[in-house]
Length: 269
Image 1 (cartoon, rainbow, N blue to C red):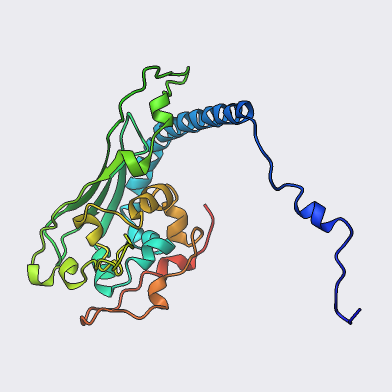
Image 2: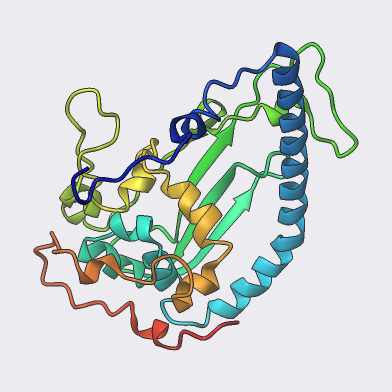
């Protein structure tokens, strides 16, 4: 045997295939499906209760952070996905006027929501609040729509973000249409069968287009918003600003934006 050649341990092939080719009976598969739906029911109930309990806490946080300069700009930019889609310096400059971010969830179906971005007076657009609405269209209920003791129905378990939720859009009232960020940095369609844009362009395309191909809404509502303080302090996500390492595509003579400064503390709360 040549030096360096390893001999497989006895029974190695048998061990490798030991977990392959497992077949489930129809009865076992049905039982697993039923238990999995029970798990989903509990998850939905917990999510509903969590929303009710956390709403007043988020309202308290809202009052606290409104006095912290660039709180939401820093928190958002510290989320990796958001940072990738907000690399233009003009977008980052616009975000320095961001005063508040709020997620208003549907009481009946809190998995859908409206995102609200509130801005101070700024040189870019006249709107004080930019909204992105995600609307839930409930599918027809089955003949036997079981509702459990926690109020969770079969229809709720069958919820599908892809099939039952539609994202809305708004037209931003730009102060100078020729300098609209969505015009300067449009969302460019991909070629072929790729549904995702080849170039997302300005972050503000997120509001002006119905489609949300990169799930930015879910990232903001489910990641950044509930953990906003941790993202602001750099304790969540990657803790890095992508704009530090990426070449800016902005040719404007905009001032340099320092969104990193508040993260130096790194303290835990």
